[in-house]
Length: 234
Image (cartoon, rainbow, N blue to C red; front, side):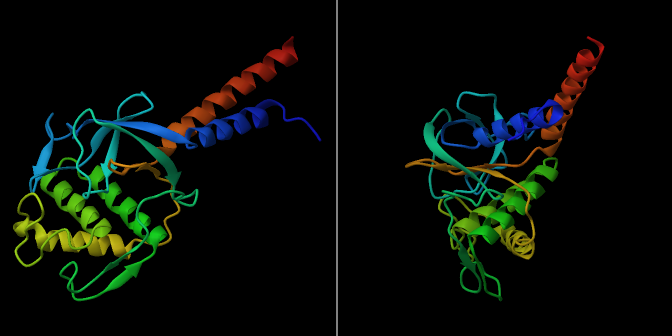
């Protein structure tokens, strides 16, 4: 068996460490409800919406999207979570598929999503959130669409009441975003990191940062090239 040398060896380490980062249990801490809205959190319907700030295993704060409106958590609360990805087969992800349709979300059509399609829809809507941070109302509507995807019926479409407040004036827009998510629930193989609680806690997802991985890989290649040049000149 031949040994890996130079750039190939360093790149194999890159992917090894990337894989390790997604393995095993992690500790999640909810730092706060997110301060993207002019330096403060934004509430819609009595719940905070938009990116939340969390830490994973004591690391730096990360902006995460909450896809779980069924569990209430407080700032500073921590819990253990399992880690999975769309690309890695979802693993212990919380949601097992959902039926969205007439009498459930207020729309006239009915569609059933399997687990993969549901998370792809969530990913699509999460990307919309991050692309609309300068439009708080839009963020709130998309956030409620995600929550209604994972917990159909959480919004009472007769009067727009949810368990914590009222979102009646946003229901039409929310349903529109739900349909956008459903329409974009296939063919998206991009990776999201999913932190699913072991016990009480909320599930969060982190969107991929391919640029960071590319820069890291480029840096390793630069190091490898430097080492090779040194060896040739030495």
